Image: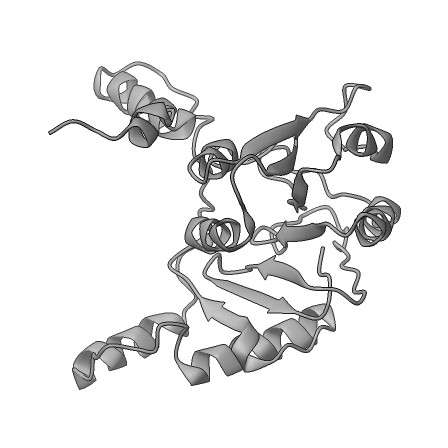
Length: 241
């Protein structure tokens, strides 16, 4: 069976390619420093293990609401309010099977053919292909000063009439850079003025080890927040970046 033109146009994941190469080298007994996929060494939270086991023991496993269990959505709302000072309504919370699905669902709802999504380099390698799968165009912003922190002048240069959104990831994957609060505030103000959307993937927000506290900023307008478990998205009358 022939693949569709769209399927043939999507590039293979660089991360999965590196993973496979590292696996082959390791099996041959060669020394490998694997810089591909990043996974914390932490085990599952201790409270989650007996809770999951109890659900399996009950055997009460049924279809759930498509947007998530109400009790789980309430937990997400509490967490968002406690950690980011952003109170969201239950109808604006969707549980997803990972951040990739949450982001793709969002892109699917906002993009038309030839729209543009601004990506701040370095970025998660799946972003460009997710945008292309919806017949839109990724526009990459690479800081001209050689750092891993984006600059507003670089972003302003590429934003145009076709720009639909800017994806923000801080703490950044893969660089680890935490965007400064002044930049985030300027970015929100810029998006407000241009009537485009900024949405944030902050599933890495707890993985900060140098004493810094990543900041969020809320203003009126709709936005999307992903994380921190990489499995929920909340859209509300706030920006959370």
